[in-house]
Image (cartoon, rainbow, N blue to C red; front, side):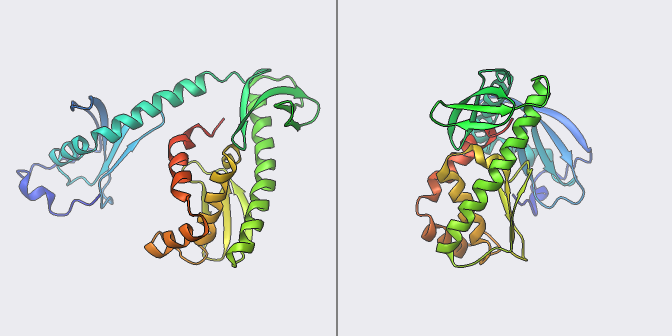
Length: 253
């Protein structure tokens, strides 16, 4: 969100502190926030972190008055994100990674069991996870991560190959990455990478992300032409996009 010329009507009271915590009360609810002053920042950005912190990134010359005005305008959104952060915290805290715990794969829940080798029992609703040693929490998370990455490589490559036939353009490479803030990326040389956590999502959501990245082979932006191309190949993409925005933070270990 840009702020050119904002300080003219703010009494020319500028703030040069680099990082300060404040509190704001709004009709939608009050919350604390941190202003992080970044000299190279050209816009004002608001981020609600997974730990429930509200971070405002702004240039040192942006007045605090403008930041508060922006936060009040975005208060409903901020409070929704804060509520989501609480739910996410409870979700992660409830995970035991013990025998019988629930994991998600392709949008379906499976009970976790430990075995000498990994095997998915779809009929029985169980994932038999191969463990090399004692099934302690960190070891289970590491084994699950390996299994998810293996499955992601298979599933996402298969879906990309299938959808590429309908699309007409071929990526130069399909790979898996451990992204923290994106679901996929398309490079100018045709390489496409996907977040391995996607394999926890339902098939339609996976297909939307695959189509999204394939469309970047033609449009290296998010222009109207890009979204028209996505809609042509995946008419209900907006529904999957909404699902990913709501449930995406829960696709993690």
